[in-house]
Image (cartoon, rainbow, N blue to C red; front, side, top):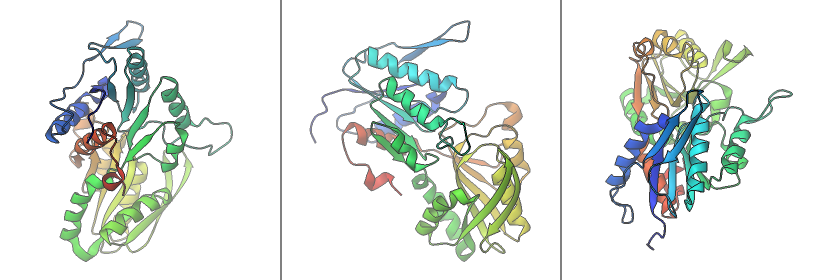
Length: 331
């Protein structure tokens, strides 16, 4: 392996500090020959009284390959902080700046689904390009084709690789009664990928909506009675679809229902809905931290967090060392 000409540095915006520290620890465990005892870099953010803020690097990044971690979940300040940090790194003469977005916000706005609307996923891609981003690492985009919105390399990893160990344990426990379910028609492809690896049946839940975030009716398609079912999805937002699907599956004779979802957005009444639903357990990753609000913590008893920090650490090192990623990160 040739020597890397540019030093690697890893920084984090404020919303991803805990996750970034775990990534640093995982990188150091891998004993890469060219990345020794890396520490999380010093990225400071000055907050002004009017609400504006200004990121600045408290150490030199000249000539370095910089990875900046940030999940762009609400509020919008998280995205703006990332954009300003990338701009600061480029203006400080970093050789390359790669954005690491475990959760890529606005990904659900990936097309014009009605007249006169924006395509938010493309707008964010344009913003990342304008500030000088050289590459992107992200996880479980809402739609794979979003990768085509970018004019620089996108390294897309899947949490399914981290979920599989837990799913295999559940499958061994429930044996022939085990099934994978999609909470809606849009999740059918994802459910089929899991089912192919686990060699189990699929249940598809067909839902109808009258407006956004409100589910009117769910109709399961497939064998439900007597099955132990796992619903797989990429995002849990208000949890309306997920909990309605779980409740309907139980009404139709399922023995148990669990959920696996990558990004725990969990807005509005999501925590309370999940707590009161038929779901036995909900597995999520740490791309978005669970709320620390005491009013929401009390509803988190069903949650199980599966960290993807080790997977992100491996991806960062492979990108830095110009190594292929397809052998390990593609389902």
